[in-house]
Every structure is written in structure tokens, then in C-alpha cells.
Length: 187
Length: 410
Image (cartoon, rainbow over all chains, first blue to last red; front, side, top):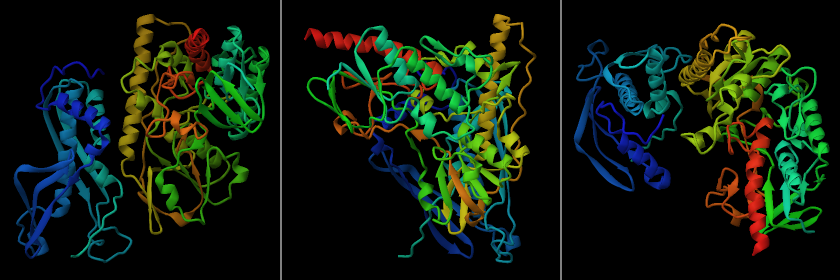
């Protein structure tokens, strides 16, 4: 794998810029310190709206091109109004987005043209946990199954290697798979 | 005391350098904190054998010549082999001399020891890659009730209580220790992070025969893509046994060792393990197959017919139910097999970079006259193997000799 050649395939990922950033942040580790932010406002019932706008990195503040909002709620069988996906579903979407973006990046870096990539995710949950019925049951997922259907100009082994590498360098995969300290305060 | 060259450490690397210095009639001493092959005497477990077959024990002018070239030396045989190497050219080893400080003076260096100070023009640090254990931050969170020891202090199952054992790390050390404890009746859990899986034998030959034959071990530090990564790579999941058996997560599971992901933290009463194990295992299997493909292609091209059997691939790693939390109270003992790092605490801070590390180019340090030897991938993939000592020492002695000549002319 050589990093000096310009990749001959175009999956819409600017790999050269990413490699440049990698080199830059190796030399200037303080610029690699990022802060990701979100806010969330209660609307009514279990319906709330998260907003995502600004973040910090490369030693300064940044804003997205626009403020993005995501509504979340619970479905009608939970006696809610179903104004949006449930938070656990948003976690699945975040995981899928992160892995899929990673697949495009790794594939481009490896000179593999992607024709189509589809992820399907499923996570089991025993509601006896969040409902406090059984204290031995955890609140969260009992496991997550991600299935990728990928059409690309590469062998099955090469595609599997791209998917494996994407997991290895995925932020959300790490956030979900590994414990993270969470501090919740009230001001 | 004055000598042109001080070599620190009388293991295979320091002695290989001494052999090359002797051949060039360059006066020197080899300072050794204990006796020749000290870490093999004092910091290895009793049953350990070399990972490389006997025929690969090749030092300058001193090769394995016993009856079992395909076997694996025991720890004591390895000590004997390295001792024999030192004797073969009457290496000027000063045993039981502990180096306390090396500082630059102009010109050359002062090497302060517990038996006086040497002044010299050149220092070769050959103190080994495994001077101290590399422990993850979670080690500080383990309750004091749990007995902890590192692979450097592990000797045999007799040291370990009858209660459950958690072995952290799945490179050669971790898998071998987990295997030995399980065979001795302990309940063993192994926490598995990044690892390198390879079969002991492939197509009728030892995996090291293949790595040597296809040229993988001779790959140079200035020719590979990601040198930092290559230098940090954990040791191969291998064991040297008379049966030439493979050792991997499948064989450990078959013997009843429980597999979990990387140990991440202690939360209350629970030890929490990473849920990313399936990915690490898939990666290890993919990389194993990539190397075996390379071997198959090599056989096709070169037509190495005689003695080469048909390819049989190791079974994919099977993971059963993998818990991500276990009560820490279940474990009586934790053994850390999370790798080692060299120690240069005896080097004057002015010889280190701002991160406290020595910057060097293939063992040639930024400070003229200071050299490193015997570290992982120092100059070649085999740099930290016995078989890698000769080539690296031969390379560096040329540079060193030129440096001395230049000094004399000034």
C-alpha cells in the first residue's frame, strides 16, 4: 500500500486531504483535540429535538453549514406520538453512518471503487431492564448485528478487510463497544 | 577507566556487537548488570522455549549444531547458547556491573556504574526490548485484594493460587501463560486485544521457515510503510513445543479458557471488557490469510515442490457468547501480559527528545556516538530475534567504526 500515489478511484472521498491532515496532526497533536457538541430541548411527552451546530478543533471554533435538528420520540405502542425515531435507533443510525463513511474512506485509500453499500442493523433489547422488572437485565442492547451488502470492484476478502479496517478506526464503534465515562450535571 | 567503546548489555545483541568489534580489533567492554543472557535467566517463565526453531539461532560464527534443528530451545538451553557465543570469541564482559548513568561530555560519554566510571567515545545500548512491563491505565483500578503479577515475574503455575485467573493480553506471553495455567487445572479467562495470529506449521514447514524464506524477516526499517506501527506490533501468537502445535484462541477455547475482549475498566464491582473483539478476531484471521496467500503465491512462482504439502488453512476463529462484564471479585489473580518496553532511565535526559524518547535512525542516535541495538524492527523485521542480532550489529559497527576514525583524525 503506497500513500504517495494518487488513488485512481473516485468514491467522492478526498483521501489526499485526509492523509495531509493525518500528517499535520501527527506533527501538531494539540490541533487534534476536538470537541463535539449537541443540545437537546424537550418539546412534549417523550418528544424532544436535538440540535447540532458548532464544534471545536484545529485550535478553533467551527460551525456546520447549517444547524441540523433531529427529532426523537417513542412509537405509539409506548403510548407516545411517534414524532421521530427512538434514541436507541439513533444510536444504530450513528453507528451505521460512522462505519459506512469509514468504508468509503478506506476503500478509496485502497483504490477500490464502490458501486453500492447498504448496511442493515439490528439490536436486541430486553425491556425488563429499562422497566426495572429484572435488575439482572441491562438497559442497553444485548448485542448489535450489522450486515453489509457491498458491491465493489474487489474480492470478497478485500471487501471484508475494508469493513474490518473501518471498524478499527470508527469513533462510534468505539463509543458503543467500549465504556466511556459520562458525567451528567444540572445547572 | 577509559575504552573507546562501551556496550551495555550482554544478551545476543550486545554480544553480536562485541563480536563485530573484536573482528575489527576495536577495543571495548561489555557491561552486564547480572550475567550473560541475564533476562533469559531471571525474567522468563520456567517452561518458556524460543519461538524460533533451533536452526534460526544464528549468531556470527556461532550456530546451533545439535541434533534437532527444527526443535525449540528451552530457556536454559538459550542461556547456554548465548553463553557459548560469548565464550567463542572471549567477549570482554564485565558481569555484575550496573550502569547508573550515561551522560555526554565533550567529546564522548561518561558511563557511571556501581563499579566506577568509564569514559568512552561510543556507547552501544543493547539492554533489550523488554526491560519493564507496559501496563494499561486500568491496572491502577484493580482492587488490592486481587493478586497481580506481570509476565516478567511469572515463573510457573505453582506460584498461582487455585482461584480463577484473568490473563490480560493475547500475544505469545498471554496465550502461553493462559494455556499453561489451564493445563494445570486453573479456571482461566483471557482478555484479548489486538493480536497477530499465525499457525505454527504451514504446508509442512515451520511458519518461521516461511517468514525467513519469503524474505519477510529481512524487510528493512526504511522500506516499510508504517514503521511506528510495525515496531509496536505485539509478538506472534505462537508457542515453541516439541509437538510443534499451534496456539490460538480456538485451541485455548477448546481447552476451556474463556475468551473476552480487551479489559477496559473497572466499574464498581465489574470488570468491563471491550465489545470490539469480533472485529479484532476478524482482522487477525484476515491478516493471517493474507500472509498464507503470499506463501502460496511464492510456492507457485518458485515451485518449491519437495517436502511442501498441500495448503490447509487454520479454521476461522470461533467466538461463542462473549461477556462484556464480569464480577472482578471472581478473579483471585490477574496476570498482565500486555507487552514490555525498553528502559533508558539511565540515559541523561539531555540525550532524550522532548517526549523522553531517544530519536534514532535504525539505531544510529541523533547524538553522535550513541547507538541502539536489539529493539523491535530496529533495522529489520527480525531485529529483536536472535537471528536478527548479527545483521544489525554488522550494519552499525560500520557506522561506529567510521565515527571512531573521524574522532581520531580531529
